[in-house]
Image 1 (cartoon, rainbow, N blue to C red):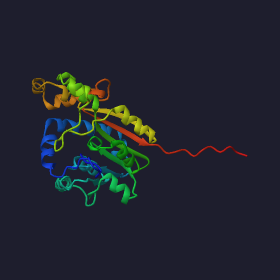
Image 2: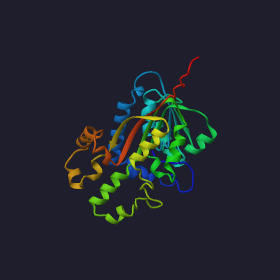
Image 3: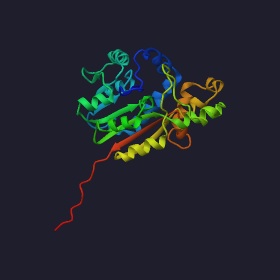
Length: 274
């Protein structure tokens, strides 16, 4: 789910795919993330399970977990990913699924290259855990929105700056917070650009997007002590996350925030009449 357009400073995961899959997807936190995210998508995007097949763009689709689930519901998915390593992992995952031929198309694209070379628009655009790996996330978000049809739906998940601040203060890392030194190191798996949720919401609204729903992804897990995690089963933790993921203040402290937004159809100006 990590990617970005190929600009100076953006992070592409060639050479890091194996490490990423092991450290993120192959952990409890990865299981929680996917579980809460998918439950929220099904809840907030009823067209996934109702009506006709959708055209879907999963931009920065990574190893293909979400794309596979969407295609399994009968939709046509373009999985665009700038990392060839990630695309290879995605192709291997999809090959294990009982999906119809052509239900997922793989394209080695960044969002920038897609906008420059491709004028297709989609009913649903999935854009998960990408913004935080970009030097200019809001410019990229604006490009992503051009790929949505009027009335189309955006599923956006981003790395929440408030969660990082809260976590570091509770660990006593005051200097990091005061200096706002949140940027991940080159070659690491810490995002380079955690985002202020209000800035993201404002950017969407300025682009004629109606925010339909929000949910916190891992409101509690990342803040729990290790011994507290060990006392509870994964199922118990997921149940608690699901119970509170749409409620403030818990949503605002989640490691990731999932936003579902609809591209509004511009109304024709009213005539004055004669």
